[in-house]
Image (cartoon, rainbow, N blue to C red; front, top):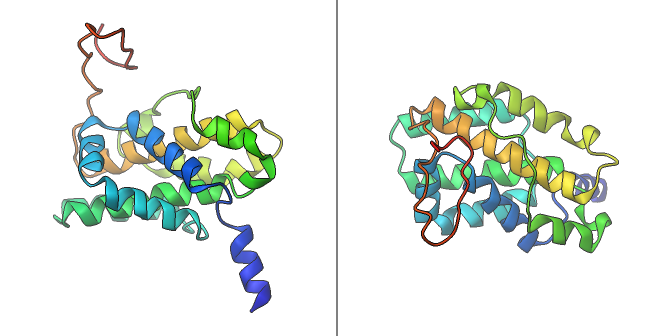
Length: 195
């Protein structure tokens, strides 16, 4: 019993709730605009699912989980439930990629607030294929073993963003990038937006 509790604790996100929520929200900012709007609408369900899932071991297969969520959306599952499942997947990314966040001290807390340097959305994710992002999540703990807190936070945000795109595109959601925003209140740069 005690060994099982130790293994469970070792396989989940050890950062603060604040860091988890900052990273989860950052992943939605670069996600599909329609899905991001629905997440904002059901933010309570999303953030609660992130918080709970980050404390559990990650899903065994993120690709299967992403396909399952896409199918649930297509089957007209109430969107509050679908958003909660998406939040659980985002929390699973945290659990898989940053289980040693407490060992990084305050540096991870600071890095979780951003800014994040990410490569953008992969073509596979934009086409609705969760396979490459699932492999990225699976290999993250080995890839990030000696990485800085900023690199870990950026990888989490990148993988969450790609997972959201894969789920939404597979569910038939609008895969167009966000439109260029009105710049009267400052310049806003949205990758992939018309210039």
